[in-house]
Every structure is written in structure tokens, then in C-alpha cells.
Length: 297
Image (cartoon, rainbow, N blue to C red; front, side, top):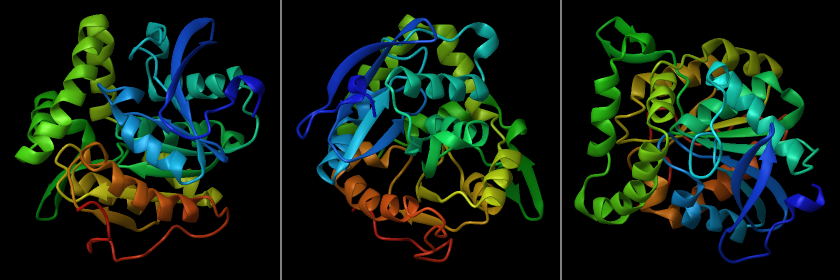
């Protein structure tokens, strides 16, 4: 890790600016130790996760959390590059800009998980292991009996309607809603077309071929999913795990469970990142796919 990527020892995230692909970029950084890159979800930014990321730093990780293009104060990608491959290339160039040369553990939430998968596929020398948290990328949307509906069939309204519902019940609503609104509303006002374009990319993402290639490479991957998530459906995460040939770690909570309970996120990440970082080891099968693992309370 080069001089520009030095991180604070402990405490809260420090916000910095750099230049990636000739355009301005914003990122947060905190902690010291093994480098971890955290990629945020759709409509949010690295600031929404600051409490959760601090828990990673307190557990001996040097966290780098870029605001992906079009979010926060990071410039948008050119129109022709607004795809998962384009975002993955941007992350690779972000690491170059910070002089990060060694392979890193990448943690991706939701849309950020899709970018992380694409990054590992397209730039294998960049990624030592993956942790996918309520990630897009599975080929299935829903099922009825033996009929499985593909992700491409999912309408945009169905994607959008479950996100606000995921902020319930009340305790989570009071804690999470102000954070989500403080991030998503400025993003929508600042770049409405990017906001909608990324949502469309996320809802239709089918990364089964990329996931199967990561399986062939035996890349260490841990999949974590909140049992009450209706944005990333059970069918979708099952399809993702099937393509990887991995079990999932299931925790109580919805799509943004780590925002509602950052302490629990830190506890879960302490376990799964240790497993994911052990290159060549299989991902944890701490529980059968449909049995809950320990997680947020």
C-alpha cells in the first residue's frame, strides 16, 4: 500500500479525495492492518456505513471505502462505461491511484457485491478473497413450484417497492431511515439518470457465468444474507450460492441489517473475513444453507 493509501489508526473514517481515470473521486479510510476494500450499495455511499466500517477497523483491518462513480462526490462514469464491468475497472484504477498493489479482501454490499464479483472476475490479481453481503448477481428472481423466474423478468417497481419496506420494523426505521435519506436523496438530486441507470443494472444483474469462473479458480468467497431481505430474494441468493458452489451464512435482518446493527456486523465480519482471507480454504459451511447462523440480534 502506497503513501496515499495510509489510513488512520483508530477512530472514525477520514474522508479524502483522489483522481481516478482523470476524474475526481471521494473515499473514506480508517484502521491499520490488512487492507480491505468496502463497496457500498445502490443509492448509498461510504458515509452510510461509517459505524459498521469502524467496527472492521477496530478488529485490525485497514478499510478503504470509495464512493462509487455517480455517488457522493465521485464523478460519474462515461455513459458507455455504466455497467458492472465499467464499475469494476474503476475500482481497479482506484486501487492504482492509491498505490495499492497487493491483492485485497473485497467486501461488497448489494450493488457493491456485484461490482466486487465483476472485479474479481475481470482483475483476478486484485482480489485475494470476497465477502458478498446481501449481494446482487444471482440469476433467479422468484419461484413458484418448479417454475423459476429469471432476474431479467423482475420489473423495476418490484425492485423499488421492497427497499422502503425493508427499513421496517420501527426500531430499524428510526435508526436507518435518516441515514438512507441523507445519502439517497442528495444522490438522486445530484445525478438522477445515474441513480436510475444503476438501479436498472442492479435489478437485472445475472453474474452466473462470472461466479462459475470464480468457482473454477477456487477463489475464497463468503456469502452473507439477511433472512428478511426482500430486495435480494432467497431465490436470488440461492442461485448465487449454487453458481459458486458455496453455502451461505444467514443472519437475522433485512437488506441493510449492517446499518441497523453495526456491532453485529463487526462480529459477523470478524468471523467471515478471517475465513475468506485464508486463501485456498473453502468458504465456511457453518450452517446448512437454510439454517440461520449467529448474527445481528
